[in-house]
Image 1 (spheres, one colour):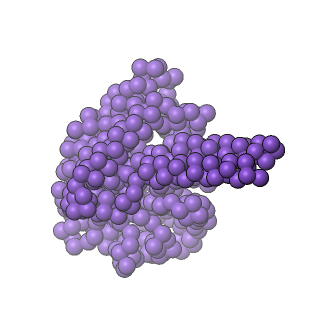
Image 2: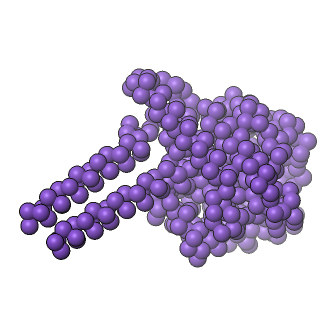
Image 3: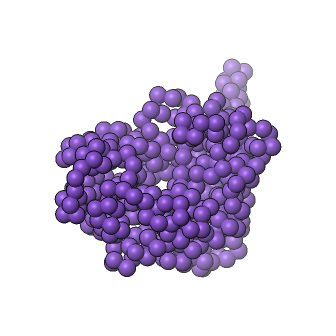
Length: 409
C-alpha cells in the first residue's frame, strides 16, 4: 500500500509538472514563431536583474525570444571619453540572454541624443568627426561581432515633418553621415551576420515622417551602402493608434524597397491615469492593431515591446501624467492587452499550422518568398502543441506502467 501511495504521488507530480509546462508552453514568442515570424521580444537592463518576478517572466523563452538593452549600448555608456570604451553593462545583458538561448538586438550607434560631451560639444571638421565615428562604430561592432541579430545603426534622424533633425553629425557632415554610418557598420561586420537598421518613432502615425524615412532608405541604397531593415519604434497612444490595415500599409511601403521591418519599441500609453476599464479595452485593441499588422506583412520579422511591465516603463518619467503603457501591470498581472495579443497570436499560429498541413511539403516553402517565407521554412515540422500532446500521452503511459509495477510489488 505504501508503494502504491508513493506511485500515485509520483504520478500526481508528473501530472502537475505537465500541466505547469502546458500553461507556459504557449507564450507570445512561441506563438509568434508558430505564426511564421522570427520573434516577440522586450527591452532589458541590468537594473532589472535583481527583480525576481521580472526575471521569472523575461527568462521564459516561450514568452520572449529577443532582448534589446535599453541604454547600455548607447554612445555615452560605451565610449564616455574619447578612445576609452566600456562594455560592462551591455555585456551583462548579453550574457543573461545567451545563457537562456535568446536573441540579442543591439541599440544604437549614431544618435543625436545620449552622446558623451566630447562628441556633442566638440569642434569638428568632416575629417575629424568621420575618424571619431569610424573608431566608435568599428570598436563597438567588433566587440559584439556575431552576437547581435541587428544593430540600430542610425537612430531618430528625422523631424516630425520628415526633414533631417539637427545634430552634430548633420551640422558637420550633412545628410551623408547617414550612409557613412551604414558603410562603416557594414565594414565592421565583413561576415554580414548582423542586420543593419534605421530606427525611428512616429513613422506609424506621420506620413511626412514616413516619407522622410523612405528617402533615408533610398539615400543609403543610392550610396551603395547596406541597409537591411527599418525599425518602427511604435510609441503609441491609447485611442490614437492607426488601424491594423493602415499600419500594415505603412510597413508595406518599406518592404517594397527590399528591406525588412519590425516594431522595435512598442508600447501604448494612456493619456490619463488611472486607466478605466474602457481605456484598457481600447489599449488592447491598439496593441492588436500593431501586432496584427506585423502578422499581415510578409517582411515584418517581429515585435519588441519597450519593457513588458509598467514597473520599468520609460513613459511616466518622460511624459508626466501618461503611463500604464505595457502589457503587464506594476504587480505583474497580465492586462487585457496581453490577453488580446495572446489570442491574436493563437489564432495566427493555428491558421499557419492549418495552411502548412493543407499545402504539404511543397506548400511550406511555397509562400516562401522574402523574409517571412525564409523564417517559416526554418520552423520545425512538428508544432509545439503536438509535442506537448505526445508528452502527455507518454506521461500517462509512464504512470500506468508505474502503477502496474506497484501492484506486482
